[in-house]
Amino acid sequence: MQVNCTECGNKAIITSRQALDPKLANLYCVCKNAECGHSFVMNLAFSHTLSPSSFQAKKMMVEMLRGMDRAEQLELLAQARNDMSVI
Ligand SMILES: [Zn+2]
Image 1 (cartoon, protein in one colour):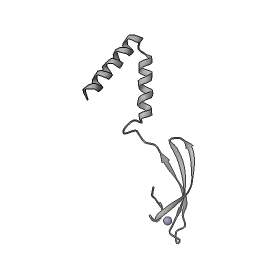
Image 2 (tube, helix red, strand yellow; image 1 turned 90 degrees about the vertical axis):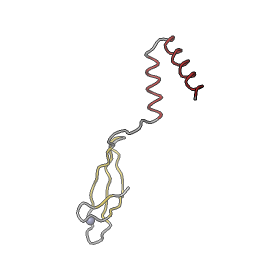
Image 3 (cartoon, protein in one colour; image 1 turned 30 degrees about the vertical axis):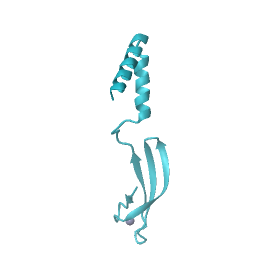
Image 4 (tube, helix red, strand yellow; image 1 turned 180 degrees about the vertical axis):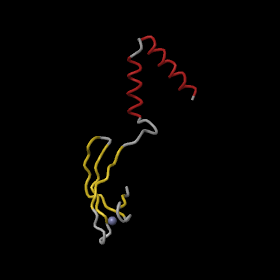
């Protein structure tokens, strides 16, 4: 990950990272330009999901199955097995 100095535009190095939340961190940066020497803090924030994690998908499926009665659960599993045998 590259961070540029907000004063001179040169590359800066991240000296430490302070996690505030799983989706937000403060990055402590120092400009590599010796003549500038700017040190600053940047925020690194999660924006949005493009493709869900497989962990998330499994969790959602379990939650959905829990909301169904036994007959519906078995019917869906049977359908899933039939669809898989076609592939
Ligand atoms: Zn700089």
